Amino acid sequence: MSGNYFIGDSLERDPSSLVYLDLSESLSNYEQLADLTSCSALESLEYLGLMSCNVNSHGFRTVALSYNLRNLKILILRDNLISDVKHVSNEETDMKKVMKLEVLDVSKNKIRKGKKVDPMFANTVVFLW
Image (cartoon, rainbow, N blue to C red; front, side, top):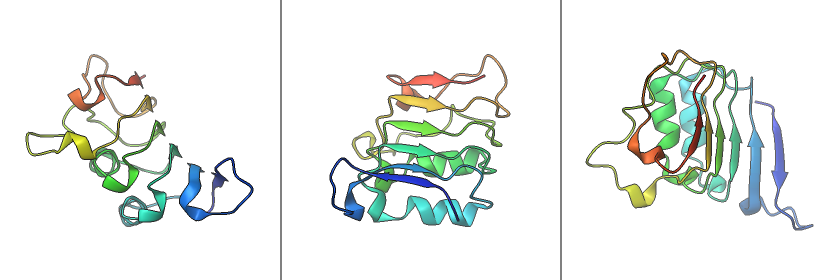
């Protein structure tokens, strides 16, 4: 896996302060995505770029509901295989433990025009097409 990363504002290289991670065109399967979302070292991450990583709707749901990625502010999933952004959370989802995104980019996916997004993204700027 290759990609770009940015570690906080400090001069120290403390991995717990990782705030920017762009793995666009780096992930090729769901297992890699699942490993990423289960990594507790990413708890401080604010930006995650996953453009052209073959992420489908199931993978999108995995990212969106990841406890380790709950501090994300910007999630870029442009040009993937996502077709459903409406059915992410359910009545059992603890909304206090999921991300509160400011920006979600799911443009250039398989989402049909007119589709709605999950209520968990009610306060998020969402780019669909």
